[in-house]
Length: 116
View: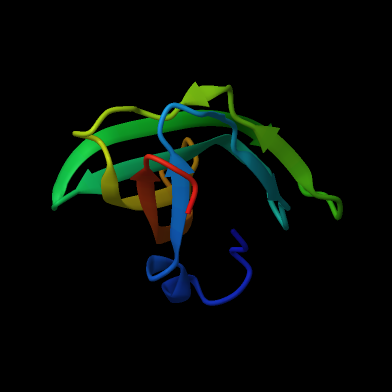
């Protein structure tokens, strides 16, 4: 997922995840101008308008740099079973200790029995 372009396009793009697989998310980012203290990545997951999950990753504190920083989440297992299959809306955002929203976007996720 590339967040450098138009973020509204991501809402219509659906990522397929096979149920029961182990996965990680790698985030690459740059910090400009000021130190970012207590950076967090939040994912609010909705199904049929109801929030079903809230995941918070503590990314850390970073100073300005021309090079990209990378953060890799711990291994997680995708849910499995007939009740969890289907489309989800995920609202993701980066925030810090000062509750400054650095970036937010929406994207689609579909948990399926097989890779499509």
